[in-house]
Amino acid sequence: MNNLLIAPVIIPLLTGMLLIIFQKNIKLQRILSLAALLATSVISVLLMNQIRDGGIQTLQLGGWEAPYGISLVGDMFSALLLLATSIVSVCCLIYAFSSIGRKQEKLYFYPLFLFLITGVNGSFLTGDLFNLYVFFEMFLIASYVLITLGGAQRQLRESLKYIFTNIIASAFFLIGVAYLYSMTGTLNLAHLSMRIAEIGQDGLITTVALLFLIVFAMKAGLLLFFWLPGSYSVPPTAIAAIFAALLTKVGIYAIFRMFTLIFYHEPQITHLFIGILAAITMVLGALGAIGFWDLRKILTYNVVISVGFIMTGLVSFTTTGLTGSIYYLIHDVLIKGLVFMIGGTIVHLTGTSDLRKISGLIRLHPQLGWMFFIAALSMVGIPPLSGFLGKVFTTQGVFESGYYWLGAIGLLASLFILYSMIKLFMNAFWGETILSVDEEKGTTKGLLFPIALLTVASVAMGIGAEAITGYVDQAAKELLNPSLYIKAVFE
Image (tube, rainbow, N blue to C red; front, side, top):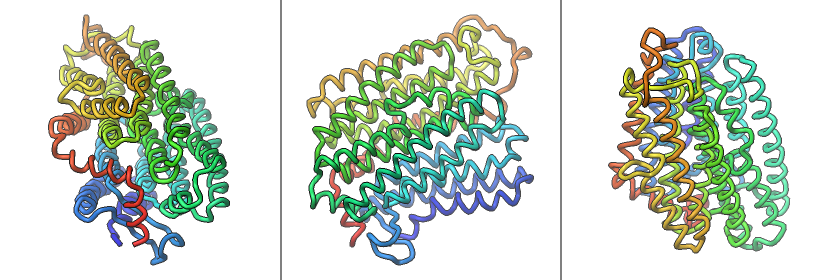
């Protein structure tokens, strides 16, 4: 029993509830929000070290033993994602201080931001399927309000698409939960794994597995990403950055958890299907990334490509492939937050996201330009930056498992990422400077600090990869050995 597991959920939740009372005190809201997220970061590091030394940690809420009570389970995969979430959320929050605007700050921005983080952290830690649904709904409801913050016509239009898509996905989620409960009599993830191992994954259970895959694919943007480009391009930058960094990652986490712990008995059907979805996602994402001249849409389609690439490691179902996926997943949380903040800053300075109307920003804003350049190289996987190890291990794992076609598509998608990011860099930062400082629509005052923090975090992850190698290896081995998770929950 480890009571620390409840802290990443309860700290942002209680702080968010408290901030509702102090809605008009902006300074207090900023200080308490930042303090809550920093405290969550420290707890994430403590949890990682406890899991490294003592294995998977559990907490049975109310003293009810599994599978009858509510279980919180922290393995290394969860802990790494908690830490990445904490880092990116701190940076996005600091970015919001200077960019979100007083009006939005008074419209419960900080409580909603913290409720979103509560839902994300809870999803990573919950040990049962129903509470996974509850935490999903929690961060989705917060995101429904955040996406409309500002009340622009475009925001309202895209939010409808986003809300309807997620309502449909949530309905299918509940149907899947009901089917699985009727067949196994439990919703505890560890117990589900045991029951399905006992009765065998027959055709009906495989069908339910595919139903869950569709649900989480809609949330992760795996093939079913039609809602994503619009939804991520309309909110204020700080919100778009936290969306790009985290929301698809929760769907990815759920797919990894379900298809390594519960539905892993028929990989020739389920994992092959995931591989086909990943391949189509990467191809369509690549076409979108190179086809548009809108800065925000280029960045958003790069989110789509990453979702497909991360999934390829799961398809390989090898230690090497999963290690690569975990490296790339953590890197992607940081780097997507970073490029969306830089992209939003460019729009803030120039007043447009059309690359054909932007040029030569690097002369007036060299720090911004070179930080974007580092982020672009990192996304492509240039050594020694943070995306390199994830690309290498994932590709190696996919080739080792014999999915040569999937590995080839993954490598091809990397070339499209390179093309789209260099196109963005050359058009936005290179060439003749169009706007003087006086003609710019805004300033970078207060915006460069959180961008620099995330750049340092990303570079540190690449250069100091050896420091987290042991943690990532442990996470991959735990995912491939469900008995460790089951043993931790029941003993």
